[in-house]
Image 1 (cartoon, one colour):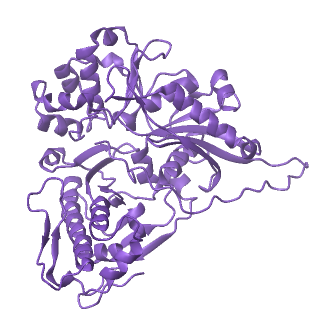
Image 2 (image 1 turned 30 degrees about the vertical axis):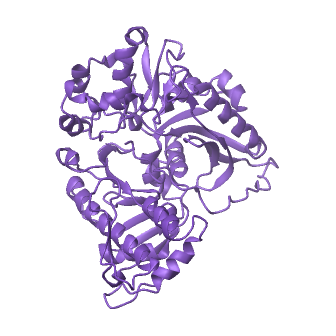
Image 3 (image 1 turned 90 degrees about the vertical axis):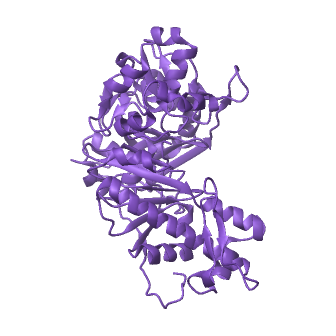
Length: 503
């Protein structure tokens, strides 16, 4: 799967937006305008326009619902309307027109989910709708990919795991079902590049989006001739690669009119939201980040990766980092989804989480030998052990928290082998990070500090940092990030005899 940090899109910030008050004026009496980067963020459930200043403060934001469409060909298929997404961005920009009028928009970045895209003609017109990652039509292509190349070899070259929605499978499906379209096509554009093309007229390929496609040689940082030749896909379909922070072009007049912005604003390459969430969270090289939600997604920004190991572990993948010379190996597994199931099973869906936490916190570490194997999706031995007549529902919940922490420990050990690093602490984001009891259990099991990021609007922050770098305000993305004040809470490992306490 193209991992989505925190959804592996990060959980929206719980901090209220900082109010913006324009400075009183300069020596000449003119009103000084605050300068911002405008981040256009296309998620699966919401489209957002967010203006971010140099310090990472959100000056204005607006959101509107996003949804895929049902395909005409088959009611079980899903596709995206590019025009609808553009109109939703326009609506968001109209909503923040007043605060933006007090700002100078220095640059625009686009960030979105991975893998999806479309074939286009020389004018950028879609030749076929954007097939959504939610669409099941390409699952059979994945199941039979061995007719082109062994799945293990494919992952060793590309890094990307076998997920039914991968870009490679979409293009093979189009080749086999609509071969004339590949002949007619001027280019394949990933969804961020489709949006950038409408903004600037330029045909490009965001490197971080390409890194989700299962078509790159991840070590060469370019499309794999071996994969393309084996699958019969022409290299000419993929326009020039652009790195994060590189200027794509400038906002052209029709797009400026649609968004209510000035013509000529630089459009800076961002791309796949996962990579910018990692950077925006403040993650340094070799600092693992855990996005804790329905799924837990563990990733790291590493300088090395052994892609030959990836195919041995279910849920593993590796994408390109937002900066050259780094990789983002990762693993994912069902986590809060297990806890939600337990809540519905033993309490009610409406029971506050704090009720479950307090019942578990009253018990000693180890849940009095009640244990849970939490891999409910694939393990035949999943479930609880050590149950007695004295077992309470608090035991079940505590055993699940401890079992998930055990799963995390195993996956972190695996990731350290794949990425050739040693974790000194774990950076934690997402909805699961609000569970202080679970955080402490993780710290105890891993025997390293857990660092919880309170303000987790990290995808937007990361995209804005590369925007500021791209317009020349800072000499590097790291210098842009250094302007941001991060707030962390720490959970340190406790000694064995202590009871688990909330922080």
